[in-house]
Image 1 (cartoon, rainbow, N blue to C red):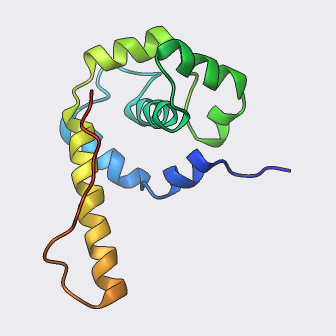
Image 2 (cartoon, rainbow, N blue to C red):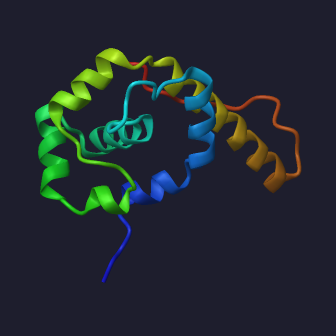
Length: 128
């Protein structure tokens, strides 16, 4: 019986349409047919949640859970591919995705509380 993972639950909070919009704005998937921005986002989020120390750990994590790529709607994760994506893809697309998510979170909070949210506290880890 299939049971969604924690990573899958977190990815459900990230609307695919929002990612597609930012990818189109930045043209981030140009010349990339296999490892697209969504796959890159899934790999980096999985790396962060698993506490992986590097790309080898990330590759082992995704290889160990072979079917997770299918359920997370992403392709195969190889260390050389992730390295190339980290070097070649602009980080600006991920920053804009984050800003759109924060704005969306503010809207949801305003709808739930019925109050205007003048200040929204955002805690982000800025270490590279």
